[in-house]
Length: 408
Ligand code: AMP
Ligand code: MG
Image (cartoon, rainbow, N blue to C red; front, side, top):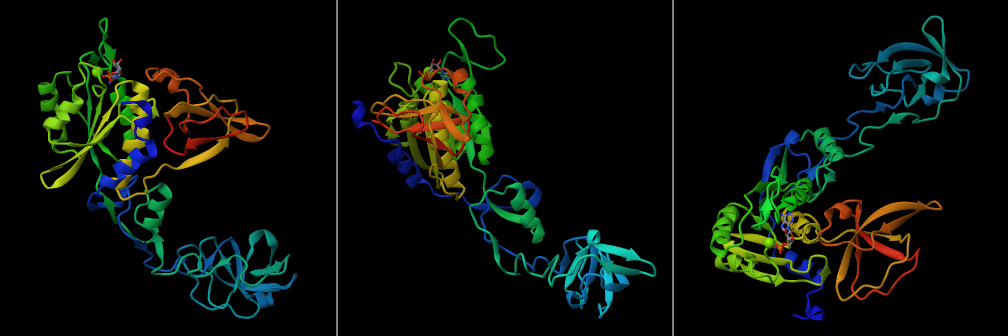
């Protein structure tokens, strides 16, 4: 296949996303929902604040009584959780604490720093009170029944707090996509091994797992598979059985021992594309199959560590997002390049980048050359930069595109 007939990367992503059917949802306890993807619309069960709430420690009074120098008689106290049950009348005030209920009759809270305590339970105002000052009215943040969270949102810490605010001790989330991790290669040995000559430690399993776990994927580890069609087919049969997504690394180029395509064919998979216009990562393969009443997905990632990483970031992560009902297109940000960049060839290029400050403005510093094998150098970047195919050389200060997530 000639390079210019290779599939463009955005078209490849469209093809992946077009095949995706979101996974069913399940209900989990709130404490188990962190990092999961919301699969329901959440509404407020009550007003927030649920009562008129004091925003400061001080005294609650009628703003109409609140001229500078006015003296007020304290008739009670409203601490957080222990409201004052009476009504504040003309010339009266109630001590209130932050988070306490502003009592009936009062419409302002003057903070403790702005009052002077006198004898006989009296206070003098050092500053005029303004109506509504330091009073968060019932429902002023959120009204009961209002939509507070939409499906497809990742449950971050703040959103877990929102769910708790509205009493959601159980929440409906997308099922975690099950990913079967199957590195391949006769030369690949586990991390704890001392490689013999010609052997290589299994970096990809760990690099890819690190990329996958934060997405909510349930990554299941399988042994390294060998470069032999029958053995690989048997290994993939087992691994794909219960997994939504099969992720292999290696064995997908045009070498004599590249057995992933025939093994997937033996499993009844339909290949949607094989080889795309990207550097690194050209050999990427994507396939699906209908099995036991559901659709399953397979990514044959290249073996070279940088290639497999880049392909996982650009294609597997969006697939996992889409499976969980999330927006899945690449999110990018554009920054000026810190240094000139050469023209690109017929393939899109993905390069590691770091952010640098030049004269108060954030610039992207791209690692100009990366070998698809050199994960060590690649790992020094904090971001992935994406350069289009057939780009002309650009000078410092001209725009470059970074993937907003993930970071290498
Ligand atoms: P392949 O795509 O199988 O031809 O592999 C390309 C290159 O990536 C070879 O140099 C492999 O040794 C290397 N490689 C393949 N799988 C892994 C892995 N799991 N960890 C580290 N390097 C790998
Ligand atoms: Mg191999």
